[in-house]
Image (cartoon, rainbow, N blue to C red; front, side, top):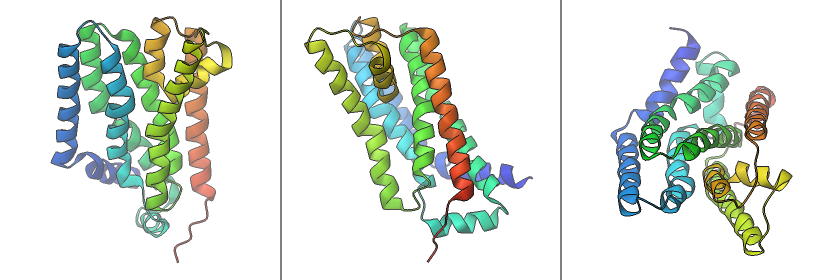
Length: 232
């Protein structure tokens, strides 16, 4: 077995190998089904649950195993014989670990006819994962927890506040501001677009998500290679 496969296997086992992980996944799926049952004709409660609690909680659970002190990362680099295996191992694990959540939610959303939200959920996973991979470079568990809370919970709510402020003034959010709101809160923004609160082009969305995630992932790999691990 190559060291990269061993690294991915190690991280994946830590992230998804516990019964608690699958209990949380089941809880989120049942919660979404319950919300849909209670509000079958109103997407907003389900959208808000996925955007502001479901996906953030799941991603925090996945990335929690990668929020490590510098000395632990330095040990892993030595253990797996190179920074590439550790960096790429975390990257691959971050993507693979989203498959259970995305598979369950995509199936539910397709059955319920929420295609727009499903594609936004995938975009959300790509964007947020890129941001959280950068957070793993902090080299401090406490610092990583604080920053992850900002990216997963505070910034999405700020996007919601920005959108609602413009809507209360009767303005349609367009251009750069619309794409910024989408980056902060993809699922909620997809819902808002269907309600006519903002204007986005599909081509622009694809380019924005692709470019942003590419920049984040490349920057992560570059920063991981040249970071200074202070292990004292």
